[in-house]
Length: 117
Image (tube, rainbow, N blue to C red; front, top):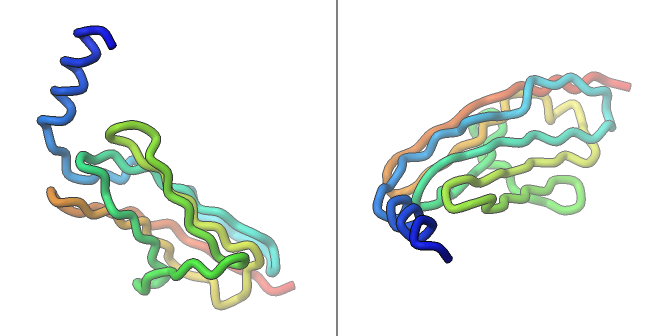
């Protein structure tokens, strides 16, 4: 590793950053039982705990119908994906990507409208 990269890494490690949800998927409208996925990107250091909420209640992963996958892209960036494999009318509502670390909290919302067959 070059000395420049080491200095850059040390700089990042020494500067904590409160979460910032930099993007979330646009509002969606689907016809049941179509699948739908929502993505969000979070910048923070140290890494955040990312939680998805549906109408204010935490979404529980229940494979295979509901999955939540969060990956660490780089030292400050995480991406999280909520997938509903088979939507039902009750999935309609507000979805929130919430990120929390020792420096604070941030969230962004999107909407899902599920139409009947």
